[in-house]
Image 1 (cartoon, one colour):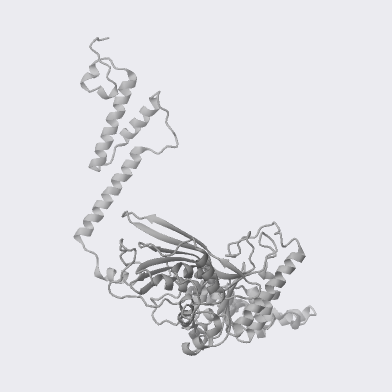
Image 2 (spheres, helix red, strand yellow):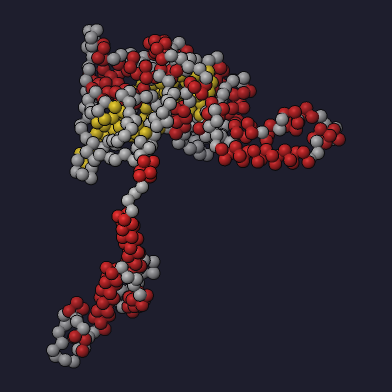
Amino acid sequence: MNSDYNLNGPMGIQEETLLHWVKPNDLMKSRKIRAKKQALKARFSCSPIQNKFVKQVKNEQLSSPSSCRNPFKCSNIKKEIDDCEKSEISKESLLFDQVSPPSKLNSSRNNENCFSSLPTDTRNGFKEVEDKVLSEEILPVDWSLKCKVRFTSFKPFQWRHTFKTSEEATGTTGFVRCLNAETEIKNGRTLDTSSNAQFYQCCLVWQHPNLPFINLFPREKQKSSGQFGIYASDKKISGALHSEWGESLRSLYQLLRVRQCPFFYICAHSFTCLLRAAGIAGFPHTHAFITPTSKGFRDAMKKEGIEFSMPLIEKGHVDLKQSTLEDEELNLASETNDESEEPDDFLETLGLETSQFPTLNQNRGKMSFSREYKKVQSVDGLAQSLVYVEDMELQGLINFILNCGSCVLTTGPMAGIPPTLLSPVGFNGGTLRSLKVNSSTVRTTSGETQYCVDIQGPLLPTAVLHLCSLLSSSQDNYSVNLIPLNSSLPFCSVSPSLIGSSMPMAFASEGLVDCGIGKDIREVLCKSNDTSDEDFPSSYRRINFNNGKYLWSDKL
């Protein structure tokens, strides 16, 4: 061996020193380094790498004793080839964009969407409108229940999730007695008028039943299992719960009839019911909405003699593809029935009468294949299955819900527990429940601090209006993200124009003076939701407040 040979490692070996004696491991490492250099040059030049280099590197990895190849590991050279192809595509698209500018027609069409095309301001987090401003000074009411609400702003909130003794006492007194601290202080009452006391008053709700160890809202996410609940196993306990729940439901209905309660909700595992007093949302009569419903539920209501209507179906809220398919089925059914034997003759040969088989009666007009029947049957469980009941039929509806066995689960952890009642005013058997409040700070990508307040629990429409009105008095810019209860979203789609009757807002507001709601919020509740502009959605999942005006959208 040559004495001049210097062991400097694999990185020190050059092509000129290959004439000396070299160890096999150093030689294999140098070849791998050369193959990686060639792959790196091909990547910068965006030229495809030859397969022989890929095979060479793989064979060297297999032949090397110090490393063992992982058969499930992706090749790095394959990723480099994909990066080269993507860079070529991006360069071509960039060159095409520079040569041909975007069309003005496409940009004008995209600007029609009030939220999708608006640029986001990184300073205040709000979206600005260039040409058409879709905003109002008064936020309309959204009749869907909210599961969670988040308020965000770059300015610190005056609210705190920890309350003083006077703030909590004033908030509880104001909510229970339906008092306004600012107006009552003028009458000589010693109430706390701080914003934190008013905030605590907005975070209260009346609920029945209230079981601290079971989450009774939302009920639609509760899945039934084969296990029996602690209340379903004992009939005395379940019977006592149902009797107390019946008294609470009757108390709420009586308050609703005399307009001392503006509205209340019934949340079951299979449906959600909203009952509103006369004058609310422009409806002249006391009314109720139930959604979603099934054909069996509606048939049970018909057997009890309850008259109802389905306004979202009767006014053409049905898919056109569905109607065309129904027409084809109707034509096929009529052709097959014409060729088949008449059922009357067939039953007479067996010694039977047609009255014993009403489904085979031809005088029914082929109800099983008619368009109306299929239209009603195909919307089960959807928003179009909403049922509207008004005026004198409500008493029958209350009795039906009290005696309906499908309102209470028989299996699972919620077995034997009646539906949840939610109301903005007190009632017999109601429990005063406070919502969960949490405040936090978030650091944005630009390095600024954003303040957040999260409220979790059943938020009624009046609570959302009160919170936005309270925050608007101290904040110039803020945004709200809301998560609604999915089964309650169809409540916002029904307006007095679909029913065919309406009531002036002035008369409705004066008739609800004793409902326990302030004048400003009461006028918003009595306002009809008939909007001629389609850009204003009936429900909102995001609200932006900027300089005294609200901008909302039904998408997050």
